[in-house]
Length: 253
Image 1 (cartoon, one colour):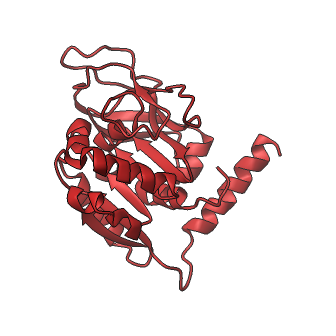
Image 2: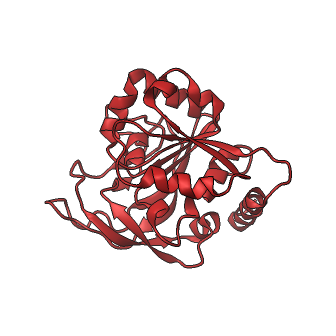
């Protein structure tokens, strides 16, 4: 099957997934809320997903709940913005292992900003469920509206009408493929077209780097998002569409 045939098939499957289905069970989404979470991300996600009760049921999850097996009652977990290292510390080794087992067994994972750092491969505290690593240890690049380039697959999956979109960025990871032998290669849906490089962070490394990417870990699917579409007017629909992709384990990748 050629690339165009695979692309059209994936697009048609995604369209079917995103169409309302009478009698279908809603997707059960847990949003981590505990140490390491900051900003308006959790509330913005709850507002977006909670407004579509036919498609989603949404609840905040504490580290204690995750450590004691609560993820088994969900289809997907979201780790929002804040501090990836502090989220990892809040979970503890046992909680991080629960998240890894959840995804490996077929659960979905979306990491936004800090949650994307958490998913990456190159930190001692990270989950190592996404074939991506940060280019620099200097992370405090600044808060700014930045432009993203979307490829054909990104436009289709994210439901974007344009090749370029403007999104809120707040110190999210500047990534590159990790080339890990233990993880499948990631698929890049969007790259940074512009950048910010404050506080002595290296310039020139953000432009062209992945902004939104997808991958798999065991039977589960993983999404890493460096910026904040859930807090950007006109882009709040990105996360619901990515949730639909992440829980559709049987559809073509």
